[in-house]
Image (cartoon, rainbow, N blue to C red; front, side):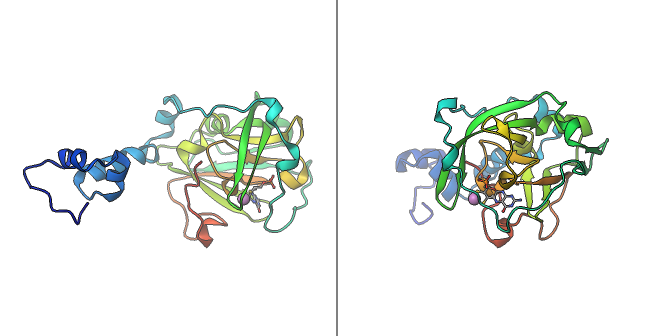
Amino acid sequence: MNHIKLPNYLTRRQAIQLLGMSSIGYLLSSCSSELTTKVGEISEPLNQSFGELLIKKQLLIPEFSKSAIDPKALLINSYEGTPEIDPDKYRLTVDGEVKFPIELKLAALKQIPPASIVMQHVCVEGWAAIVQWGGVRLRDLAKMVQPQDSVKYVLFESADKYTESWDLASAIHPQTLLAYQMNGEPLPDDNGAPLRLATPIKLGYKLSKWVTKVTFTSQIPKGGKGYWEEQGYEWFGGI
Ligand SMILES: Nc1nc2c(c(=O)[nH]1)N[C@H]1C(S)=C(S)[C@@H](COP(=O)(O)O)O[C@H]1N2
Ligand SMILES: [Mo]
């Protein structure tokens, strides 16, 4: 709409109505100060502290029914094969800008009240599958370590050196899990045992398998956006 000359007595909003543009079209094409406000609203959770986000009602994605689960549809997608992890020696580190960093054994993780979700896993390579995941809510781990107000992002490290970085709001969404169980069974090694990310709000490549470390931080380090993101995949990776 920047190429179209509009009478300058019209406000931008009236002009948009005249041109019949949707607000999203407006959002994408406008360069007014209203745009800054709108983008600000969209990225607002990034500026919200852990405490605020915890009490904020986050939109829940409807679950699929158990009968929709299709185990064969879930393909294995690993950039470098399955790493060997001794479950007895395994520890999950949760650290960063937090009040109480922790290291948890699997047995300790399994003492946290579990959550389950039946969701669609979507891989950008062109396949999708309905899967049930069971495990701990990442928000419950966050409550344990208590991120400081400076925190905006969460970094994930995996045993195969895969890395991920997320916005805090998505990480502590009530449906975001660190799963140790899949389709009613213990999580198979190839699918990320002993612990992997699962959530209906992010694409497959955001869902790190074999997670060993979760770091709450105010900054994503240079080169640390994520394994695929550093090669050009979109960072937010929302569904
Ligand atoms: N550590 C690690 N996590 C990973 C990957 C990987 O290569 N390494 N691949 C990602 C991609 S692209 C997808 S689609 C899913 C696949 O999960 P699945 O193998 O359990 O189907 O894992 C994601 N998490
Ligand atoms: Mo993927």
